[in-house]
Image (cartoon, rainbow, N blue to C red; front, side, top):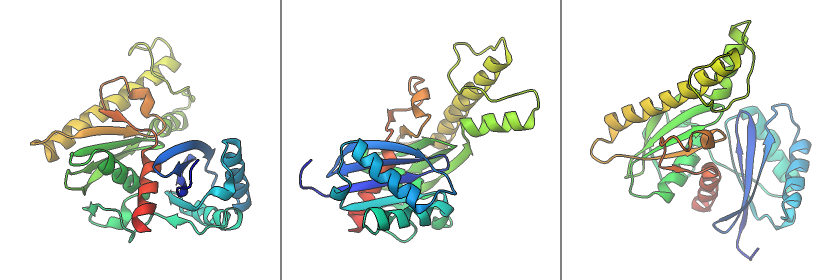
Length: 261
């Protein structure tokens, strides 16, 4: 796989840890693991080494680890796992590191580091363009980035799974359903009715928020809309997005490591 620097990137979200290895600029493998808040450093460490080997990468060839986490209680265990099982001190994307972005949030430390990573990658991949980046995960986040690489702010709303759990938990006769795109808007039974409400409710919200952000921020130069996250593919044929980039946050973590080293 060449003699270039091999970087293991880890995006630790509320539901899953999404990992990948970059050989220079090429993402050569990806893997996922449920991000359990009670998992020990040994569980994470053994999983990482096993996931690398099963995907044809010798763990000993990894030169660096770059990670971000929106789950603070998991961060210590993963850092310890990298130290013990990878023999590497991980780079953690956090407030104070170089990002190449001007953060326009009132308190820059409040911006989720996964959102910063995604914005970094998008600004690199689609340079000199106004951007709206939408991450469809446990929550759905929107980030607005100007062509001058100013991180202007964003929007946060419940994701599909969170909305479904709220329905199931708040209404005794409604249970959990498979999250999928229904064939028709009108449901003829409870399951289909919930699926329709979840899918078309989120689709409509995304469309409306894109329109409002464009009107507020980017009237003179319409934005390029980029989607990422676990549920992005479900909406990729609805003409909401210009591009779907599933590994956007991993690309941002690789960029952040290189920028700070």
